[in-house]
Length: 433
Image (cartoon, rainbow, N blue to C red; front, side, top):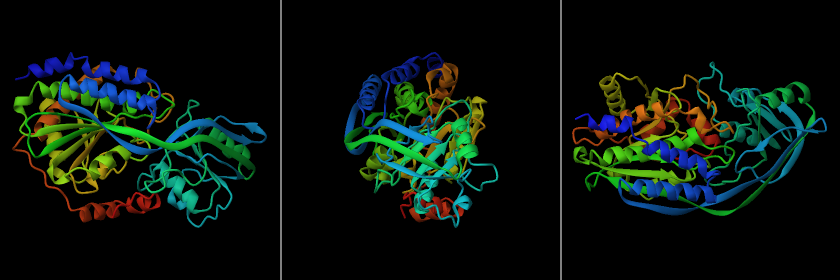
């Protein structure tokens, strides 16, 4: 039967929920907006799935105040990076370009204000995450950290610092636009600059949202996304679209429940943007032996081609390619590891998992993590097309004929070493082995 395809390509369910999320306003982890978005998601899931509920957990709260960057006696436009400590520092500005490990090697940066940009050049052997650049600066003795966008347009980037064990960072951290970063590097390298961050720190509460469709089996397929977003934007792409897609999949799969051989458990996480906290809470409290696979959506609908990162689980790659062939619609399959979204708290323990995003042809974030992450960048046509593909993928994963073996955590650790990820994960405090 193909009636479900027609219903999906004409459905407004997910898109309307995306509009609801972006209209909430600030969805920063622990905020009233994050709670409102979680409640709206619970209610939307309850229309199609059973046992829709919220589960609360404690987090380190961080609320933005004012921030300042003074160079040459003048204020420069900036924003604080979430979980930066609320403090000030002054020091000589040191421009380290891309902030690759080689750029830090052997450098004594004691007392310096380190400037790096957000890009990873083509010649780099691997992705170097913002937090790795930050903690390499901390290790080298820097007094402050300035993170410059590599996309033009006057957009300062955000993104959290901190670790699971020490959720507030060690030194103040700011984001600046490409244009401000270029001027700082050209005009003020070697001169004293001052960084000041004001933020409110304290205990806060976040929550995960749960619901289920399909048979009540012991084994389950997790379909996940995160509902929180950075406070400087609507968070449409990152990750309103992912949460809205979960709601759309709940509608579509509820209509195909008799085709599901395995329970589908939807989990919409809180507090992803401040260290994958919601998924860490869920993974630590779930019997992972009963999880067949994780289908995590983070950045869908930003471009028409889906990108499925499969973390070395060949069976996941095969079924994604089969869906692509069935619908004559390209899906990019990346077999490498990707440790920077909510799937990782399961994959690192050996659970087969996808990270599903959009293949934009650009390794960077684009509008993501800036004030330009707004609904107007997305198209309902793309959202609906991908809802069809992801519904088909979820049904295939829930079929009794589909099998995928869990990996030994030691094998995931070895793959991290082989793909040169382990060194960076140790720097950021994310190495779990």
